[in-house]
Amino acid sequence: MSSVLFYDPVCGAPYDTRTLHERALGGSEATLTRVADALGAWVIQHNRTEDFGRYRRPQPLPGIASVIVNRDPCVLALLRAQYREARVYLWLHDRIQPRSKRARTLAAAAPLLGEMAVTAVCVSDWQRAGVDATLRGLGLSGRVRALTIYNPVDDALIPDATPVDARKLVFFSSPNKGLDFTLDVFSALRRRMPDLRLIVGNPGYKAHRPARRAGVEFLGAQPQVRVHAEVRGALCTFSPNFLIPETFGLVFAESHALGTPVLTHDCGAALEVVGDPQQVLPVTAGCRLYEATAGCLPSAWRRAPARLAAAAGLFDAYCERIRAWRAGARPHAAPDPRFRLSVVSAQWRSLLSA
Image (tube, rainbow, N blue to C red; front, side):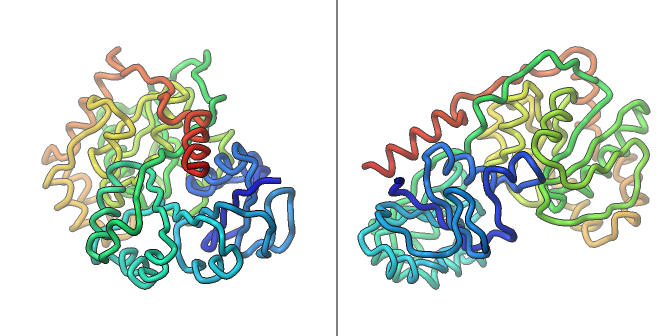
């Protein structure tokens, strides 16, 4: 019987091993499932009403030595009462900066974080820098340690013989991570390369109904097996997001594991995870100004300002990169050993047994 428990107090719906194969699942939940399954650990979710194997309703479990809390420290008092001898870890997937809303959540739990000597597990060095700064501001340095363990990619994800369609781009992130901007850029690309098409899906976090665009196919929320099949044959994963910085970017790591390069922005942990400057564009002042102006508009109303931006050359860098990749300069992409599930699960075992 495992002595390790993952506790998710914030998930929108219960999930387990089956969910990975049956329906769309967000990156954080998919990551927790993979790590917990690799460790043979228990998983409790606040809203689960039926047990499934190691996935349990809220209840005290015997023999627990390590508790990993997903995202939110709101359950620390409960867990201290139920597992007095257990070491507690707070697995942070979100961006946390001093004086931010999430920093205030940590501040509310600061006495317990220090008293329980909680270890904060971050998903990238970029994210950890913000967490460290927040902990210092809360006076928790030395009592709450922060470290990085990257999110894992299934070892079975490797390139295969799927032919690459140079006309196809894919976007499979949450729609609030720059989907409207992506559609504006794609429309400018398609005016120059009319055979381009964009496949859009999402992991099920947020519903979004943008206006229809020529060459765009909206798949909605899809299970990962469908997402991976679409990514394999794409010229690239097209994700020009700079609105919500990725703390990790699982879609980037999985795309590389499938042999597909990424075109994104140097924002958040993107360059840390992608590792190739050819796949990362700088975030320009023009992009930020455009989005500050057009970002409040409904999707259908963005077309006129997008055409003006395109005429001013705002989207030229994307066009040049895509055109070059179609002409033979497409970067090589391969699984990154840093993110292999076998490597990441070994790092978790080492942490939990220290």
